[in-house]
Structure formats: structure tokens, C-alpha cells
Image 1: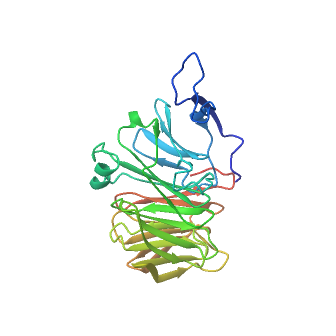
Image 2 (image 1 turned 90 degrees about the vertical axis):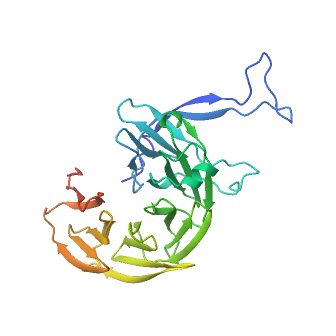
Image 3 (image 1 turned 120 degrees about the horizontal axis):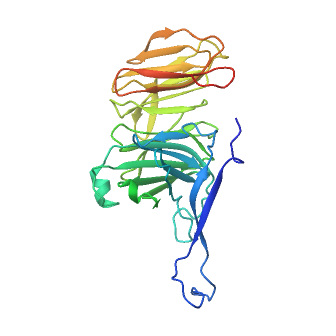
Length: 319
């Protein structure tokens, strides 16, 4: 589906850094200060975004609108927006031209040292959000009290030499983040983002549409896409594959995969409707397609041993 750019609208408000006086304020060179536009509301989804809607808690969701991330209360419909990374002459990202958000991830794991050093708002309710913009910019945002989420600026920004990203994931403890780029070699990068350190870079050499951390072992990563599902082991400064699984034939492709709860089990779905279950790097079971004419689109695991796969019928309805 095409991006619903035409459906995305926003109401903006103007702000100025100077106070209102009888005479217009001026800056150093005598010119008036620039007018700043900030979003106030928005409608529409980017349907090219893999994880376009994420739940913060039972009352709030986040989603991307262009360069911004919107936080919306599903009961009051009140919206707040996260600011994209600044682009100033003195900023480290000044050479980066930001495009629309192309991947989004969230973790509720509170990392105490980071809370105290960067945003001293207490570790009780920390939510870290990673935004990966096209044109190789990666931004991290943090929130504590939703009432104060009206306008938050990044706490850390990385850059990576790629046009875009297809998938991004946090580790179970919220300390590491991995992102899959769209370079010709389909390279993915792993960061210890709390220390602003790149840990590893590896080349998948085939299309990847989903990347995940093992919830039990942070040194193990899984990728899927095209006709392959692979398991990787971290061996700094790279990751090495130790298990590769192929679909039945080149016409059948992996659509999505996820780790089941806090176990070593993986559930993968294929575009022919089959569901595969892996444990300890071995394929244990394949559940054949149950609904003819339906296409599996994604799979979601829970904290328990259960998972849910979502079907889409020929008319585009989700079941």
C-alpha cells in the first residue's frame, strides 16, 4: 500500500523564543527571530512503516507522522509530539538531512544510570523510544510522566551510513538496540546505546524485514525476510550466523517472526499461511495453513507461552 501522505494532516501553532513587546525582537544580525512551528494534532498512518502503532500502556499509544512521533491517549484523544533531532550548525547531526521515520521501537525497561545522568526524572516509569529516520539518523527519546510529554527532545542521536532501516529492536533489558539497514549487503548494527557505543556490525547478505533479540540471551539475534530465517551470535565486533532455515521454495517467504515469552522458542509465519516453531536452533513443528485464501501478515508473542498470528483475507480485512 502507498503511504497515506495525502491523509496525513496536522494543525500547527507558532511560537517564538522572545517575549511579546511593542517592538519586534531581533537577533544578533538585526533580523527578527525565526517563527517556530510545532504540531498540535495529526491524522493518518504511514502504511510503509512495519510497526506503525505501538502500545505504551493500556491508555496510550504511539505512532509516526512524518518526522514526528505522536503520543495519543485513546480515551481523551489528547495528543503530544516528540521532537525530531535538531539540525543546527553546532549540532553533531547538522550534516544529516532527516526524512520520515522508517522504523520504531519501544521498551519500558528502566535503566537507572541513564535516568540519573540524562533525564533525572526517576527510574520508576521510564519509557525509551528509538526512532530511526531515513538518511541514516537514529534518535533516542525518553519519557517519565505522560502529562509532561507534550514536547520532548532527544537524549541521544547516532548516525549510520544507510538510506533507511527496515526493523529495529531493543534487548529485553533495554540496554542494547539493533537496527537492520537497507544497504546492498543488508547490514545490521548493534549498539549499547546507554554508553553511546557501537558494539557490532554484520552483513546478512539477503533481505531482512524483521530483527529481534533473544529475550533470554542478549548475545543472540534473529533475522527473517525473503526465504531465510537466521540466528546470530554476538562475537565483537561482529555477529556470526550459527543456524539458517530456508522456506520450502523460493516462492514462499518469511513474513514475520517473534520469540515466545521469555524462552528460547521462536514462532515464524510464512506468506503461504504456514507457521513454524523453533527451539534451541532446531525446527520442531510446522503448522500448515488453516484458512485458504488468507495471508499471514504478522505474529505477536505475549509474556506467557502464547502467541497470536494475524490473518488478512482477500478483501483486506484482518482476522
